[in-house]
Length: 455
Image (tube, rainbow, N blue to C red; front, side):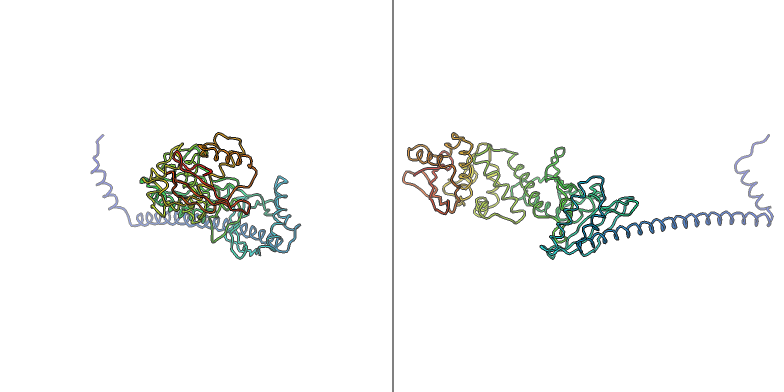
């Protein structure tokens, strides 16, 4: 037996092909063409079958989607003409509560048509079918303002029926980011997520700059389709803020304002509180201490600067601080806060005597009067006495009269002016309005804070 090398085998093959007859080569080419043609036919028919199936499925989906829209339109027609029976015939649920809710919805829509010019235009923005589930987003015009409303349906044997909102059918999860801020949401909350991202990113950046937080940490917000959720921090991830879906909360959302004021203000307050925590180290002042008022007022003022809805009186103290001494002064006061700090922390932060500061003291004294009333109601006379300059008998007598008159309405501060005194102790003259009568109250600067006095 002999062994052939590879080059010998290949040489023999070349020789065989050279001696192959024309007829054999022709048959071999025909077989190859048949195989190629068969393969192409298989691919063609396979693709055609897949296309036909796809078209059929799309046709079925379109039919289901159109039948869903038709059901919505019939339901809206019943609302337009006020046909309660026809409207309720479209409702379906395993529990009785849904029928009660929808009966109330019918009555509400009838009132809205009269009182707020509700127009059910029938314009459909989106209709989605997922198996037996259906979801329709359509237009309602309320007080002349277009709104987006979402209703949910289930396909029963007798057709589509309006069912309770399905918050698992809120669309695909999505994410938006800008700077240090990220917003997680689902498809139906697209408009609200974009508005939230734009505002939260701007607020977060402005807050860091204003309070001197050089390293602005990452922030996450998640819009959750839960109608009873309140704005709150995630207990498992402290850098993430849960925000309720505006559309889930109200079932309708203005096209021009996808982030309602109530939710916007809540988010602004939470972000402001986190910014103040960053600069103060998370201090929690003792209740009724001056620091507690400063801490809360700083948060409220910062949130108001975010939204642009400033309470000119209640937040006038911090606003006057910023107007007179700049953002750095606001940050300095925040850094000076401790759990027991009194109002003299402001003087220490600015390096000036308290009585020399050009500040609007009205909000501070308004708060003090409210604290007095609360302490009297709680019978906490020791804490109350600490707010008064009881070094002289006339003030002690005035304090007793104040305790006896605990039931009288609280005064509203009209004006407050800081003055000097012959004894060298600065005084604040506070004009108040109580029961249509103007009164003058006096506070003396004692032990680093303003204390109520008779003289």
